[in-house]
Each structure stands twice: as structure tokens, then as C-alpha cells.
Length: 255
Length: 271
Image (tube, rainbow over all chains, first blue to last red; front, side, top):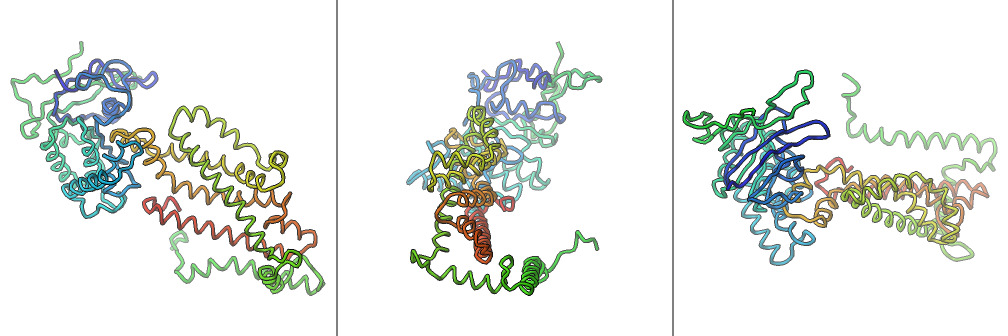
């Protein structure tokens, strides 16, 4: 039984199809990279996993259960931008992962102290301890994304969704973020879906790299058909992008 | 060098800032002097020294009949009405704006109604307010409330809709309920905007206040201006106008500093 099971998912906005016949089985703890050209439905697919949007047809099961129709705590998300709360200090952004689950969103007394201590430890670990009282706007892009990932993880989701999380970072910071993410993942063993435009990044971090593309293309009407998963590469073995000869590469075969 | 790239230094900027004020004052003084030279009894443009003298008398001398200094009584009465009206409007605007911006059901029900309501000219309903609430304080406060609340509601609901949806999604993935999202995400994010909107609506608020005081009141800054108009007492009118302008400027300044102090994360866009 796979952990995330996507079967026959179609998604269209009005009459325009975005995704067609997407089926996918993912085991718990896998790191899935989603790559493809702009506008071919990677982010839409991620939003459907998040349950911010629902498929027009088809089903998505997580742990054998259908999704509930709205984002929930079981799936964390990190966006490229706007991932942390600008009106809260760095520490409060982490504390929010606990505080938001209360009735009115505020912690008091012992709970508050415990959450602040836990947040202090987290911040120390991710190297943001010295800026705990600052607002996110004063942090660099890399620090903000580190905070966003730590915040998402603090709610202990079973699936982490990353929507081009490192797209706006410079190459050096990006490498540091890769190491940070790999470390976190080794620790928690959570299932990760990451949308990226960077193939190298996709292969380096992912266990599998899924390519979204349009299998059918109408030159007169490029929007006539939607995209689907056309390749499903195995990207393990140290992230070196090669295929073992004896392996079934799951290449998309139109029926 | 292009003019768009030339910037004045500190001293030059200060001089330039004071220049229009000085120009206005000089123009007035010259006009006043010219008229007074022809007719020393002229009441239309009293000399600046006369205005200063009148102002000094107004803020220190008690009224012979009531024994109270009318200037401060008027100020107190007007500020009470204005403060009450603006406070009620701000709270109503904030709560309604948040509800409209956050909840699609409320938006569907209320946003059309609010946009139609905001088209009603507030001064046109002033007679209704006088009929319904009488000529006392309530109708004046109500006019201020009716005058600026629709603007505040529309502005704040739009501001809630402008909050990046990523933040709401993120809050949901952290387990936040609708209540928590309203209280801990949307409310703090629109507070700087509320202060800014209140600053913008202070002008209209003064307008509605003075209009209602002019028509029916027994005290207040607007009442006094329209009362002494009958005697062509330009020195009193001008004193009151300068005082109202100064008050409005001080409120604006105070609200801006308050916003900077309370919401340092909001940055430049809240100015």
C-alpha cells in the first residue's frame, strides 16, 4: 500500500485542461522532485496535494484516506515568497506552529514558555538564534526560507510540499539550503514533494524526478491539451542522474 | 544633470518647505494692508496683528454670560463628537471589513450592499438624522460615522483580499481555525492600513462634523464659525480655521507615529 496514491486525476480551469490522466504512487519517506516547463501544471499538482485546489476528476488518497477539501496540518508547505508571517518576530513565527492550534491562537503560562523554549532550540539549530527578536523582513532570502521550512516542520506534517523554495536564492545560499534540507530529511524521514525549475537540484535532492509535459500538442491551439507525468526517473545513488540498465524506467506510454 | 536627479540638501529642503507658507502669509498681509489703507474699518482681511490679538483674547478670556472660555468649550465639544464618530466608524469598518474580506459568504451578502450604501451622499441624509435623532449630540456623531464608515469598510475589506493567499494557506497548514486566522493573521496585517485609512478619512470627518454643527448646535468649532459669520468677524473665523487645521495636522502626525511605533514591520508602505 503506497502512502500517497494519485489515480486518474484531471484538472481544468473552465474549458482549459491543465492536467490529464495523472496517476502516481509514492511510498512514505520518498523525496519527489517535480520538474517541467512553466505552465505545465507542476504547481497545480502541488496545490492539489495541498488540497488548496481539488481535482476536476480522479482521486488523491493519502494513507488510504481522501483529502478533506482544505489545507490541513498533515501537509506542510513552503512557497517561494510570502512563506513566513511578516508581522511576527522570527521566534513567534516558530511559536505560531503551536499557538495557531489553540482556540484563539494565543498561548499562555507554561504552554507559552514551553513553546518559546522549543522555538529557541529550533532557531539555534537552524542558525537563526541571533535574530530571534527581529522581523522576517530584516532577514536575507536564505534565512527567510530556512525559517519557513523550520516553521512548516514545527507543525510536524507527514508530507512537506515545497513550491520552488530556493528559486529566488543565489547559488551559494542554495547549496547551503540543500544541505539543510537533506539533513532535516535524514532526521525526520518525511515524504517531500518539491517543485523546481532547476534540474540539477531536482536530481540532487530527489529520490524520483517526475517530468510534467504535454504528451499531445496541437500547434494551432497549444492550450487544447493538458500535461501529465511523462517521465519518472530514479534519481537515487547519490543524486547522479543515470538509469540502471535493468530498471523499468516508467516511461509514459500513451495507450 | 537632469532635474529628476537633483535633490535639495537639508537646509534647502527646509527653506523650500517653509516657502509656500511664507508666500501665503506675505500675500495675505499685503492684501490686508492694501484694503486697510483704503478703509480702516474693513472687516474682510483683518491685519495679522489683529488676528493674533483676537486669538489671544479668545483662548484666555471667559465669556461674560457663562463665565467659561468658549474657545476651549467649542474645541472640547467638537473633539468629543469627532473622536466618538471616528472611533465608532473605525471599529465598525475594521470588523465588517475583516468579515467581508475573510468570509466568502459575508462577502457575497454584504459587499454589493456596502458599495451601494457608500454612494449615498451623507449630507443628503443629515435631515433624516436630525429628524430621527433630534438636534443633540447623537445626530452629529451619526453623521461622522455614516460619512466615513463605508469608505473604511471598502478599504479594509480590499486590504484583507490583498493579503497574499500564501499566508492564509500557511496558517491553515499550521492548524489555524477561521477564528485564529482572523485574529492572528488578518487582523494584525490590516491594522497599519486601518490607521492609514483613518488618517485619510479625518478630512471628510471634519467636513461632516462642521457641516452638522453649522446647521444645528449650541457649541463647537463649526458652530462658532457659522455664528460669527453673521458679524463678519473674520478675525475669529480665521483663528478657528487655523486652529482646526492645526488640530487635524497634529492628529495625522500622531497617527502616523503611532503606526510606526506599533507596527515597525509594516515598513514604508504604511506611511
